[in-house]
Image (cartoon, rainbow, N blue to C red; front, side, top):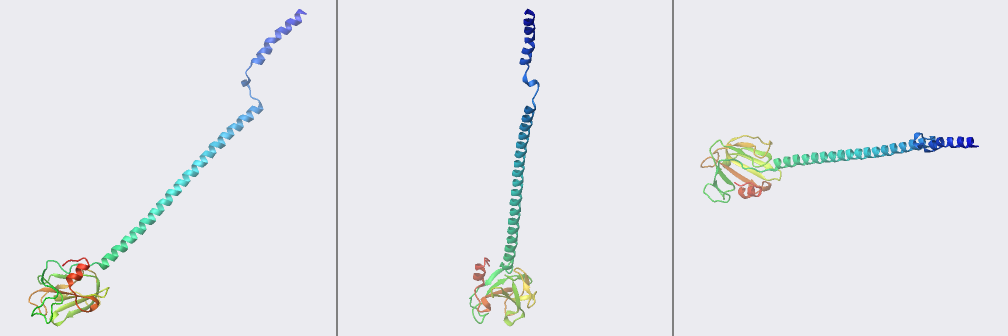
Length: 223
């Protein structure tokens, strides 16, 4: 009886050790499956975040590309408008007919030199000084014209005619297109004159003359 009790007592430490062994020493198949599922879930979540970030990056690149494209389109449009404006200003600008002159007779003056009042403005300068058309247009007359001497007439887009008289030489021909500032001849003393000068007339619509100084001032040019 005592021996049996001793055997029973002797087996108790092993039971205690078995009970005290940590459960972490081994994983059951179910625990391993749970761990794998958790790892897969984390990977899926990380992959989802990565895809979301990639989409956001792609969207940002697309937006930046569209903004750059729109900016380039706007810049091209501005450049085209600037060229068109520059062309318009070049074609429609008005300039002085010459430099280094002095006014010796104004519009409307009376003198024995003219059968009526003076029909233009006289700009005295040395013989041979270049004379330019004050605006773009077409040469409708170029040649000698009695008391006007050597004369050139330019018709502008609005129908106004500008006359350049008493020239020493003529540098254009009838039918020629000219731009503002383009040479049409040189100062001279041909026709009814007392000295070398340019006689300039403004005739709206090719009709009666008006004061060239007033007409040019309205166009932003001061004689």
